[in-house]
Length: 615
Image (tube, rainbow, N blue to C red; front, side):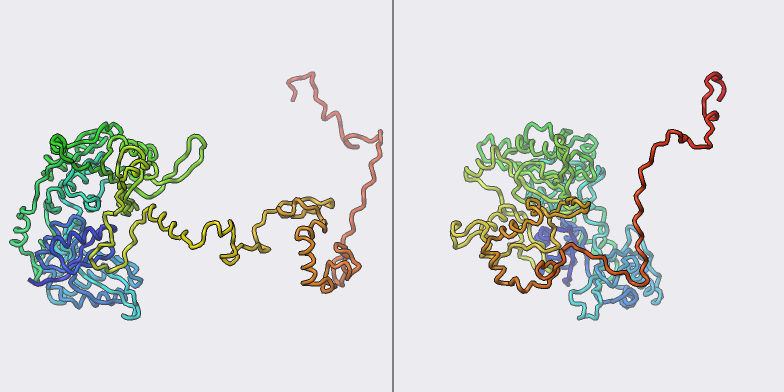
């Protein structure tokens, strides 16, 4: 069977997990990119990828590739393709796009021109043109446009690739969810978190804030090795009717009916939530997935938890004296973004319950990295902190993820009794190896990957290495800058020196620097004594007093005093200066002078109190 290139798209941070899934299915020439994994396979592998991949959003089959510099050239290139190999006459089409190009700023216009080119091709060949469907199209197309790293190599044109979408609806729509709650986590992200945490069904699992049960159901599917797409109603490739990629029903039916890879799950999965509505929704979803015997549910506030749950199999192992695996706790607590909650109080409670009731377990929590404002009730001061800062526990693993457009972090907490110092003194250590360690990746990377999150202990080790030196600490004095080339900063005339102001006797205001406040004005001796007599002599030897003759404030070179400002002679045409007003003589007292003036009639202003009604 002919092999071809296949591209699986995923969420940021799940590329390595998806690559391992593809390798398990039999993909070869695996290349990891940004939110995608490329590999080579045949039609059967294309079907298996849609059925089994848990961390893939879509599975694409690239069919045409070309270069275009503008929408008109895009139209001509698309119209030159023989579309009878991919779309049958009378079928409906839908076009999705991913564009990272300066040549195509309007993504909708690029889709519009692509649709016109396909329809015009059918009309020119005397065939019925396809219709554009908003949902459930017969043929789903994907248009990917991106600028090349070297734009001069192709005359500034962009790389364009058209692919057939074999998935149809996104693969996170598993088909088992009949009820939803507020702010549910994506099934793809939930499965990726479980796989990053190392979940393989060989221990008990507990989600104390289960919501609609996404973590519970995805964990049960992984534990029993059930295909992720088993409950979907259909896929995009089932509507392909022409060309070499036409739907093969017998091949698909054999893959769908094969249950030889399912395995027994002896442990148990527990779920709880404070909301009865959420538990009822989870119960319906678990029933629709046929996993009720593996999952137990109850309405309970996490704050009321008194002990970690245990399955009957774990109790049996302990009764027989065997070592039982520790519990895995996984949760997606509210961030205070889409679900309102008092973040500081809630996360402090979570940390306290984890420390007291879940000793010996491993807790994996995903929460937002966005800071929240906290007000101290005692001082009234406000500060900002991340939700994780209020848990009060030391994480051993940190992984950057994105949940619904919110930058998040997945953290692992290894819960033990007592203090961390005592835990380490007993010879124990936290798991410092991240679940998605890139160092041992055997897959080729098409794009440079982001560096893994550095832990605080690693940064401390780096600082210790930087401080190492052949010199002893006592050989170097404190604040000794000479070895570094005298990097002491120098002040300039525009530097931000603190200044105060004083009022002189004549009413003028003079600025005084902070350093000069303790020194009296015109204290020449104090000014010279700051540098010492030897320093003054050195300045005289360098510059010389004789060289300063004739300068503005040199008393020896001029009889005029420094502040003796003579008025310049008036020039012709200048406005004459106004004379100052003469001083008024003091007014003499005249006992015969009228108080109100000569024309003042007192009778008109005297109140008549004999008649109260008269105004």
